[in-house]
Amino acid sequence: MSELSRKRLASQLAEAVAEALRADLATQERALLVVSGGSTPVPFFEALAAVDLPWERIEVTLADERWVAEQSGDSNARLVREHLLQGPAAAATFVPLTTDAMTPEQGTDEVAERMLALSWPASMVILGMGGDGHTASLFPDSQELGLALSTADPVVAVRTPSQPQPRITLSADRLHQAHRHVLHITGGDKRSVLARALSGDDSRELPIRAFLACPLAVYWAP
Image 1 (cartoon, rainbow, N blue to C red):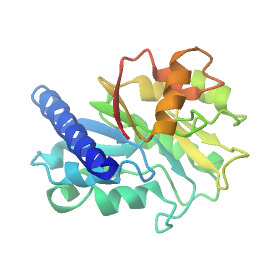
Image 2 (image 1 turned 45 degrees about the vertical axis):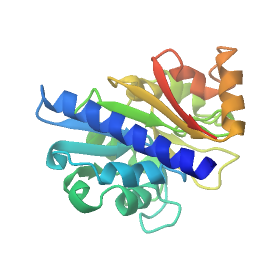
Image 3 (image 1 turned 45 degrees about the horizontal axis):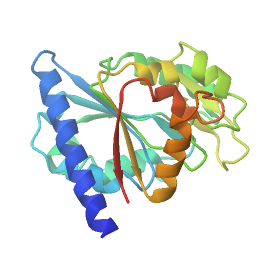
């Protein structure tokens, strides 16, 4: 049952995203979609890829990325290329968050330049959430969390004890720059974390709280 409900949720989210992109493209030349990685969005990516849209006018980027080669199984960019940029959706302009630099700290200037060239505010930012309340690469145990929550810079290099690879993330300020925000989560555990997040306001404890006032549309399935 949960697999079926997750598939239905993915289709509903794909419809909502397509509607948002069409609405914005009616009044502007290009539109930006910001997506998240992980396993949860795969059915959504595949549903959206099948939607008839003027993909050549759509830009896609990520909320965050592990600082790994794009061929790596851990790469969010690879996930997007394999599941979203297929068929007609391959005509979209995809802008990754990594460079050839050895570290995210060395690559942030180049990535920031790329981000600033996109069509902000984004039509939609689709966030995920971990069991620790992190979203994008805003982790509660990261020493860069305070910077990522407060800076006006578009991207921040992140090192987190709980994660094996260094990362790069859009800052909270940049993620806020969207017409619409969605939280896409599945499972009872994530629902419990969200309930806990809604009962307080300390974003350093549960970083998803930085987006609860957006308003944030929640797409959840068991």
